[in-house]
Amino acid sequence: KVLQSAGKDYKAVARSLDPTNKRNLRANLLNLTEAQHALKGSHTACLCVGLPYDLKVWKSQWPLLIKNVLQAAEENGCQLLFLDNVYM
Image 1 (tube, rainbow, N blue to C red):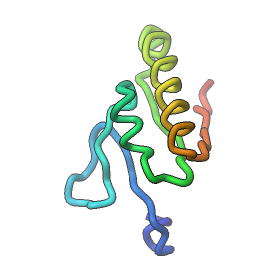
Image 2 (cartoon, helix red, strand yellow; image 1 turned 90 degrees about the vertical axis):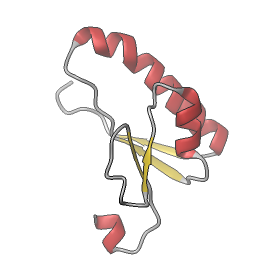
Image 3 (cartoon, rainbow, N blue to C red; image 1 turned 120 degrees about the vertical axis):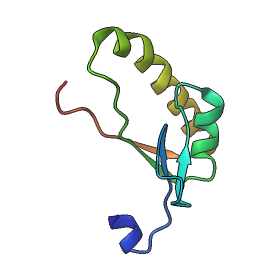
């Protein structure tokens, strides 16, 4: 909302979003193709994703998710801002 009220160009990416907002893009970052599409044309990406608080989920999904995002950012020349989980 802050970016929108400031008139900044942005898009929000998530697995589930309000489809009525044209700035929203549905993507699953566990899928490389979807991560590449999500970051296409972006100058900067803020990675604020969350996974369920389950060790098995984090062990299996986090390495793939971050690998896909890093690759997609590099391919698109996109700066990546990573916001870590405060509970770690």
